[in-house]
Image 1 (cartoon, rainbow, N blue to C red):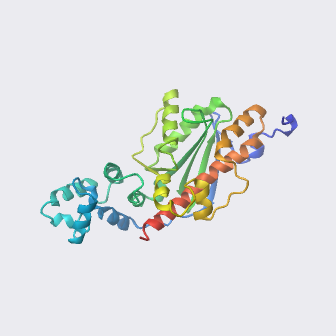
Image 2: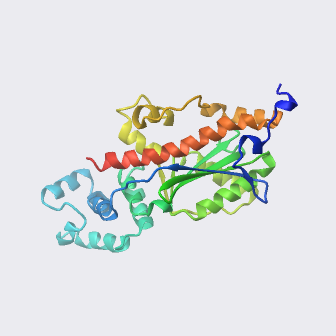
Image 3: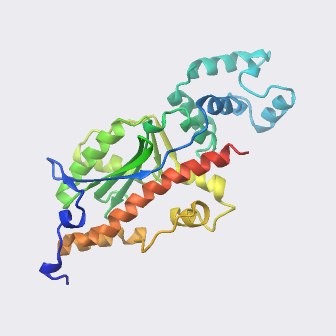
Length: 302
């Protein structure tokens, strides 16, 4: 049992913490990290080189067309059979391109692990990308006690975390997260399509909190499995950090213990128990920023 004299409060452990009017605790940290993404025109050119985005063109037919010199959707504008379909698709995408419409096309015809989803991200300004992560008290449907977003701002990467000091502030955390997500043009996560997005949807529905719709969501776990599965023991984020990104966490809290530590905080009132949770969650987002940079470099090196 932690003695009452040894129960530091949140402001003692996190001097930068700010409590908003709803009781949600906001923590912010900036790290030096400027993304270096491929140019938008190069990314758009790569997207236009995928002939399988036209209905009726499969892998074998695409290979045959490219051997005949039709190496892009633009080239198919001169093809007697495919010119109308190609023209229609390119017109729908627009120029300058509409990333949301391209995302719809990619989602319809390609698996979510396709590297073209990475190229799609290059059509956005880096500051329009929002990384997000949630910490809950258990599996899907459990209360959210910590939400976090990361975004590129002014040649740095900023992580904002929204902490519920008690379960009563969960709705405040959800509202702060939704305000951040509403400003996003594209979301990035790690297993977020299977877990975080579903949890957010369920908890917002429970409290009848409006959930913003973001047209583009790229799950970097799917991308990592496709690009790195032959280079790592497994595709857990910690493994990718060590073996690919060169990131070593010191005394990191395992993900499965995060709910236990928050429960211990609620039982003891000692905010020191929250420190490993906050550090773990923050590093997750910082690592995702490095991961998307690595995956983009790898995708465009081939």
